[in-house]
Length: 581
Image (cartoon, rainbow, N blue to C red; front, top):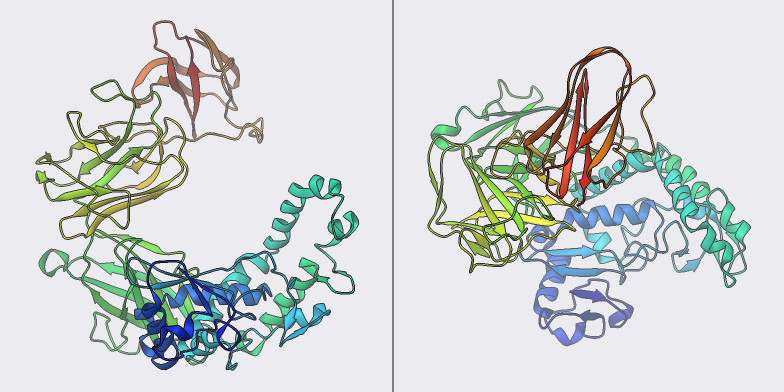
């Protein structure tokens, strides 16, 4: 980690000062045991060999960061303060830029061209390529003086404008946060401005002799219009559509044919990666009639791809003389996904296992399920599981195999002394990533997950090929039932199907389940255990429209979590019930 600081020629502005690392000591704060040569090489390439910059720097991330800070007039950042950044060199040898902070956005730090301004108008009209030609802002100058990078930067700024500001989303969000802190601000006896100033500051600015607190809406409504009317934003962007993949050649030479319809473009690129931990590979898309398109210069671009994994994340980039476009627009943050081959996949996992299935020693541990999609037995001897991007070979499968169209469970419990398959890591209920890797270090499959619910699994629906969703755990069997939980604070309209929470809950041994039918229909109300097995059917008949109460007598069932499911018409609702003895 490197942090910019004060010192050499006033600031850590990423200028190249030669290969004597002493010249960099007073400007940068190195947070690792080594790295000065890496930083110096980066500065050299940035300033003297910009054509090689993507070999050492995540340019797209930097363009997003600069576009974001400029748009929000966040001047306590590299946009106006060249030292305000962090750099981190990742496992692929690529420097990633990290925000300094975000607490002085929306013009709160109002230093423009070295002068403190007390005018909202100057903030509203901040040049979208501010400091492009400045000798003291080497990052901005070197990136934005590159014609392609400037077009990418402006395309990212357009995306932020379209998604967050043109529709007024930002103002609703500001109001949301204002409501959260309202009581705390009201009771603060040391606040700098008045409570009325706080209440009014979304729509209007607050001043004193030294500080301008721009009204967020007052600033951004005008700034949004200013940017959309700016000459840099008036050019027509390319139009990207009809992305197609032809797998016909895949079985013979491991090649996939890509075609994309792109109008108003003179350059196009296909960028892809095999895993979230991999850098992007970029290949040209051609409109020359020689890359699988029907004829040259017809607006259909093509290329051939030789994938190295069973899934890729990708995006399309296109530009003309004046503007650029990404598809999806949020790339490289938002991406498309292409499933290429899926012989062996991570099929399901449970990171918070309290009561579902115990291992052979009666312990309720995390588990990961694999599935074999093929007609052949797959040996797992050369495969690995990991939850660490910097150690993909964390746990190797012993000499084992998985049969055709079968499931295999690995307990993630750090307990290799037990019989069976027990990985040397656990899953975090707060979210992380799981990698399935082959002996070459190639990520065969991966799943990134956020915070999990207790005894609710995440898995593919349908098994083996579907997208990941929340499930009633199916543990070594077909994934069948998606788990959904309706928001009881926002009940459905009375003329809809309604399944209500059982009462009491938790219960022992009886509980009432209430549901409503808007019309006569066939109704099934069933009970499932936590591994997805149907254990009781309470209703199985046609019923007229009405309000129904059904008792479930759970005597004979073990303590734990159960699910009840209502199926009627287009209603397929599930809720959770807890039996306590």
